[in-house]
Image 1: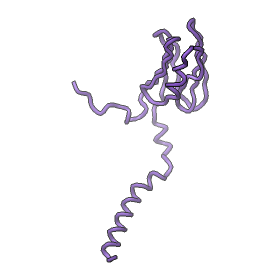
Image 2: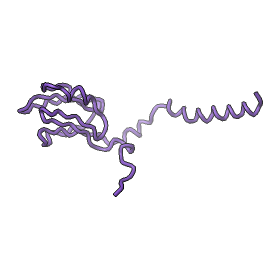
Image 3: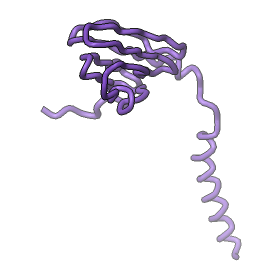
Image 4: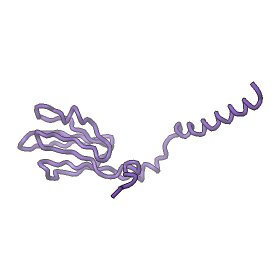
Length: 131
């Protein structure tokens, strides 16, 4: 190997490290504190039942309707349906734990819908709107 080859290899490795090292550094907590907390709207039969803030702490909500019973759990800045007494239980198995804006959980037999709203970060907004 010539001297010029070693110089090129050294420059390429240095540039690669400049891009990789910031990924290993811990995230700045001050950036997270500026995020707007997400909320979730729980609707029953098309009417707003409750609006909850998605927090790290665990919160459990029981929803009793004439059609059935659902249990919703908020934890780790997300929400999930943990129990329902409907026959198919699609709301539990298919939707799972949701954490992003515009995601939803729907229990058709009980007519219960959980939808996350709010802006999570800049990446969730559309780039442009064409009219």
